[in-house]
Image (cartoon, rainbow, N blue to C red; front, side, top):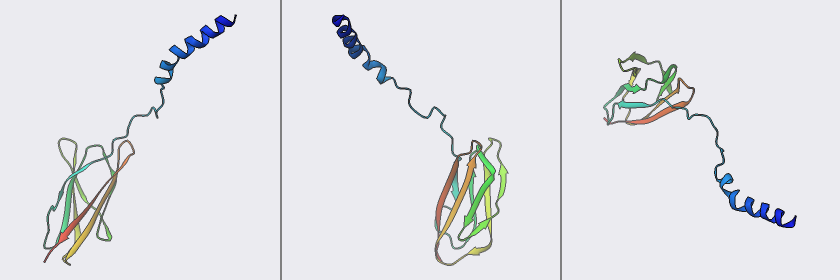
Length: 126
């Protein structure tokens, strides 16, 4: 009887290690794709900042899009392209001509519910 128990323990020790290596751990859920923002303009220094534009990916939930330039929220003009992406333009009511860096913040959800953002500093030079 003792030999059978020892053999069972030996078999478990030799073959059982492979079972532990195949743990199924992990969230099990698929990764959520964030919206992306490309081609932000203006790219370089400007004499006065009056408009900011970019392209938002096709998975962007446009209703969740928020743009803040300086300290104010801006309502953008949005046009959907043929490929599904969105061309976004935000015009300021008053151009910012004071020298320095102006913070531009863009935030939106993807259609899957993941948040994405873009932070840019546009330099205003006289």
